[in-house]
Amino acid sequence: NAGVTQTPKFQVLKTGQSMTLQCAQDMNHEYMSWYRQDPGMGLRLIHYSVGAGITDQGEVPNGYNVSRSTTEDFPLRLLSAAPSQTSVYFCASQDRGLNEQFFGPGTRLTVL
Amino acid sequence: GEDVEQSLFLSVREGDSSVINCTYTDSSSTYLYWYKQEPGAGLQLLTYIFSNMDMKQDQRLTVLLNKKDKHLSLRIADTQTGDSAIYFCAESNTDKLIFGTGTRLQVFP
Image 1 (cartoon, rainbow over the protein chains, first blue to last red):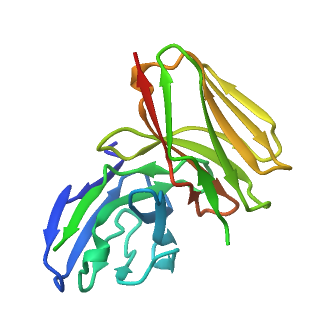
Image 2 (image 1 turned 60 degrees about the vertical axis):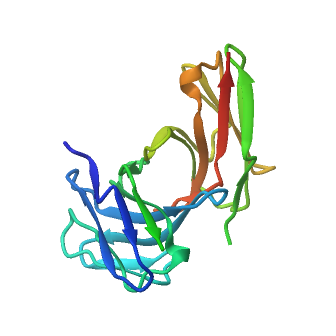
């Protein structure tokens, strides 16, 4: 199993550009989530999904969209990038019967 | 809303014990977790404790939970340089995890 994979690893955007951060898992987990990690602030939940076709907002959803058309994939879209979205983004998945979230390696995004 | 707090830094000598503390506000938390993040990597689950337990031990790791004070601690015995990382406390009462700010543990020889 590859676990949770994220692409790209690094990305630099200009203000106003849009892009999609990819996340995929091959563990057949129902629950997937996106976090952003900023210095001194821990991880903050952006959006999450409890199954294909179902998404919900987390703590900091503004400026981001998600969709969950398949169990495996959970892309995060930045509609119009802003410098405040400079961060490290982590995707995670979890089997709802277990107590562990599995994290991807992260995407480091810089918005100029 | 829920809040989880940790001190930002801890520095210990190799071979000593490390104690990382965490406080949380959600009294309905079901599970409390400790995650480890090494440089440039994602988070890995170290251990977790169910809210009706007081203590859990796993090799060099001891988790203590004081539910009355909403205080969680992680003790690492015989701390090694490989333990240098950021340690995150997290709580949940649903599928969502609420993370603390993380404690950066530095181990010096």
